[in-house]
Image (cartoon, rainbow, N blue to C red):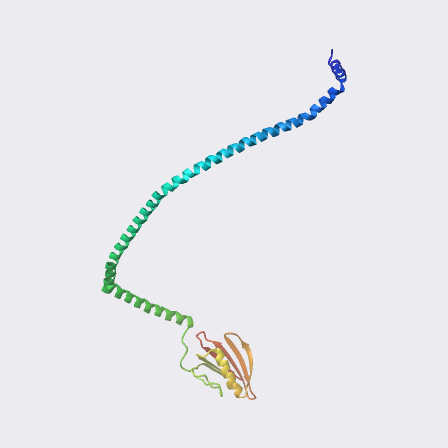
Length: 251
């Protein structure tokens, strides 16, 4: 009998089985997955119970062991307190001995220092300080002179002042020039340029001059004064030494 014939024979035999056998087989196929699921749940539940039991036993063992360990630590604490006390006492003794040694050495060191200072160190240091101070003052004067330039002149140059214009106290004539009807005169003094402008604005305003500012800055100012008879131009600037330089031009 060949392979095809065997399959047909088996199929014919299965078709002859009663319906109850087919129903029982179908139910068996349906119940088999449920049985497998129940078996897996049972195995997992058993493992969970075993694990819980082991954890409970371990917790009991730990609780029973902890009091013994705590008691052992408490028994050892007095020894630790005694050791710490001994270390503290030893440290205090060493500190007190070091303080006593320093206290005995300081008076001798202070006396030696005093003798050394009075014997020559202090006078030598004072002389050195005086020398440094003198040198520093000379250097400072030289630097200031080079920075500020030469000192202000103390005597007038030849010439004359503009008619009717009073010179500020302390100012010195530094330049004079005459060109036909024009007259140019320069002064220098210790007053700031703003004070110079304010002074001549008041003086010439009282004399009937009208003032007009031609130029102005933080360091200089030029003002024109005019009356019915003549015109004056005043140019004032800082001289770099706290004073001012001014130029008069008379038309």
